[in-house]
Amino acid sequence: MKHDFTSDAKFIAPLLPVVLLVWSSFILFGPPENFTAQMAPFWIVTASCLLVALVAYRIQVLWSCALWMGAFEGCVDALLGRNGHKPLFEKQR
Image 1 (cartoon, rainbow, N blue to C red):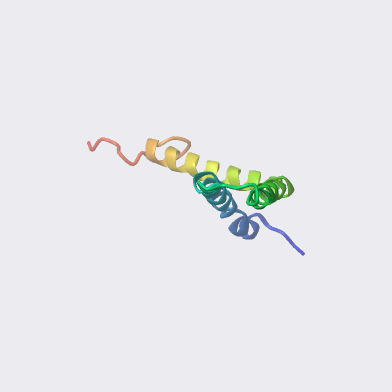
Image 2 (image 1 turned 90 degrees about the horizontal axis):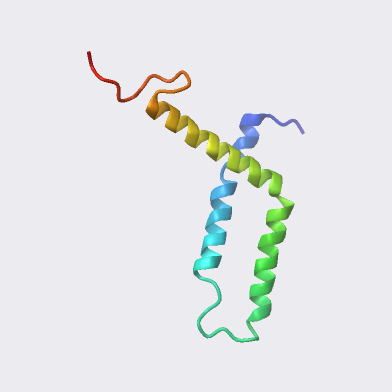
Protein backbone atom coordinates (compact mmCIF):
# COMPACT_ATOMS: atom_id res chain seq x y z
CA MET A 1 0.00 0.00 0.00
CA LYS A 2 1.39 3.38 -0.99
CA HIS A 3 1.27 6.27 1.44
CA ASP A 4 1.50 9.94 0.75
CA PHE A 5 1.28 12.84 3.13
CA THR A 6 -1.91 14.47 1.86
CA SER A 7 -4.17 11.44 1.57
CA ASP A 8 -3.01 9.99 4.89
CA ALA A 9 -3.46 13.37 6.57
CA LYS A 10 -7.16 13.36 5.68
CA PHE A 11 -7.58 10.38 7.99
CA ILE A 12 -5.14 11.52 10.68
CA ALA A 13 -6.25 15.16 11.14
CA PRO A 14 -9.66 14.33 12.71
CA LEU A 15 -7.98 12.07 15.27
CA LEU A 16 -7.02 14.80 17.75
CA PRO A 17 -10.52 16.34 17.99
CA VAL A 18 -12.00 12.87 18.49
CA VAL A 19 -9.51 12.02 21.24
CA LEU A 20 -10.15 15.35 22.96
CA LEU A 21 -13.92 14.89 22.68
CA VAL A 22 -13.82 11.39 24.17
CA TRP A 23 -11.49 12.38 26.99
CA SER A 24 -13.39 15.54 27.85
CA SER A 25 -16.71 13.70 27.87
CA PHE A 26 -15.16 11.02 30.07
CA ILE A 27 -13.95 13.71 32.48
CA LEU A 28 -17.13 15.81 32.39
CA PHE A 29 -19.64 12.98 32.48
CA GLY A 30 -17.51 10.52 34.46
CA PRO A 31 -18.91 8.21 37.09
CA PRO A 32 -22.46 9.10 38.13
CA GLU A 33 -23.38 10.55 41.50
CA ASN A 34 -24.69 7.21 42.75
CA PHE A 35 -21.44 5.42 41.92
CA THR A 36 -21.33 1.93 43.42
CA ALA A 37 -18.71 -0.79 43.61
CA GLN A 38 -20.65 -2.72 40.96
CA MET A 39 -20.05 0.08 38.45
CA ALA A 40 -16.31 0.29 39.14
CA PRO A 41 -15.27 -2.43 36.63
CA PHE A 42 -17.04 -0.59 33.80
CA TRP A 43 -15.20 2.67 34.47
CA ILE A 44 -11.88 0.90 35.01
CA VAL A 45 -12.25 -0.97 31.71
CA THR A 46 -13.32 2.21 29.91
CA ALA A 47 -10.37 4.22 31.24
CA SER A 48 -8.00 1.35 30.47
CA CYS A 49 -9.27 1.07 26.89
CA LEU A 50 -8.80 4.81 26.36
CA LEU A 51 -5.27 4.65 27.72
CA VAL A 52 -4.33 1.57 25.68
CA ALA A 53 -5.77 3.13 22.51
CA LEU A 54 -3.81 6.32 23.12
CA VAL A 55 -0.58 4.40 23.67
CA ALA A 56 -1.19 2.12 20.69
CA TYR A 57 -1.93 5.01 18.35
CA ARG A 58 0.45 7.55 19.88
CA ILE A 59 2.27 8.20 16.59
CA GLN A 60 -0.99 8.98 14.82
CA VAL A 61 -2.17 11.18 17.70
CA LEU A 62 1.13 13.08 17.73
CA TRP A 63 0.95 13.48 13.95
CA SER A 64 -2.57 14.83 14.31
CA CYS A 65 -1.33 17.30 16.96
CA ALA A 66 1.45 18.43 14.62
CA LEU A 67 -1.02 18.99 11.77
CA TRP A 68 -3.33 21.07 13.97
CA MET A 69 -0.41 23.07 15.39
CA GLY A 70 0.84 23.76 11.86
CA ALA A 71 -2.60 24.88 10.75
CA PHE A 72 -2.91 27.18 13.77
CA GLU A 73 0.56 28.65 13.21
CA GLY A 74 -0.25 29.18 9.53
CA CYS A 75 -3.41 31.08 10.46
CA VAL A 76 -1.47 33.25 12.92
CA ASP A 77 1.19 33.94 10.29
CA ALA A 78 -1.48 34.88 7.76
CA LEU A 79 -3.16 37.24 10.23
CA LEU A 80 0.08 38.91 11.29
CA GLY A 81 1.73 38.90 7.86
CA ARG A 82 4.76 36.80 8.76
CA ASN A 83 6.74 34.13 6.88
CA GLY A 84 5.86 35.28 3.38
CA HIS A 85 2.21 36.15 3.99
CA LYS A 86 0.86 39.57 3.14
CA PRO A 87 -0.63 41.26 6.21
CA LEU A 88 -4.41 41.03 6.27
CA PHE A 89 -4.81 44.23 8.24
CA GLU A 90 -2.26 46.57 6.72
CA LYS A 91 -2.75 50.32 6.58
CA GLN A 92 -4.14 51.76 3.36
CA ARG A 93 -1.89 54.34 1.70
